[in-house]
Length: 297
Picture 1 (tube, one colour):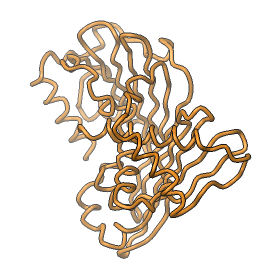
Picture 2: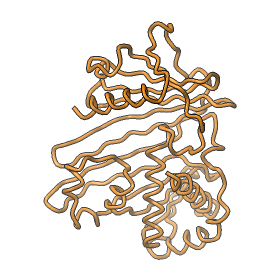
Picture 3: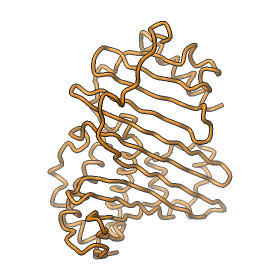
Picture 4: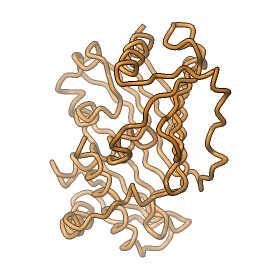
């Protein structure tokens, strides 16, 4: 857990530096391969000890993640949209399965009060996870101390972990940079699939990870990071299709900032009678046990 914030800060530092140096004309390719590694890597080393709180300082924003993973004939596809706004901050995350429209989990942490809320789609209510769609539970005592644990950025933080791990293992992982026509910059980094699996960008069951052999572990997942002219992140995409060890893999993880958040992005709560109250840790643990069983069935 403690590595996730560091990884995203490192990534942010790299991105800002690449953008600051990207003075090429629109559409111009910046250094590739070994040259790109030197181009970005030297500056990476200069700033690694001077990283700021990039994630915690990014407020009043909305995000989206489209996540698709296929292993042979097994596949999952989900979207996650989130918003955070205010000081103190309110946060909302909406998970939607593109495979089963009734598979919904939303979370809402209002700035005020001691509780946060979860909304369950029909699939979970029908399976007895909760007698009502809405559930309340105590907020974590520590609050938002590790921003990458928050569901709105959990997967992109793991994507960032994977990108940084790939760079640290081999600086040649940085394959190229390109100045786009609208002043944006795109940086491409190759991430071994083994690193993707290790960092749990997608949490895969043992029935799949046990089949990931040496060929698949070495397969590369191109990761493209697109930046605004001021160095702020536009999007972060992992997109690959490859084969190995007798299996076929497809994946695409597309994260991007989508706009400015406001309190209008927060959900409206129903009447208290329609909310199941989980008063303590024991009740929460039982709830999450039932939720896990429903997801695994």
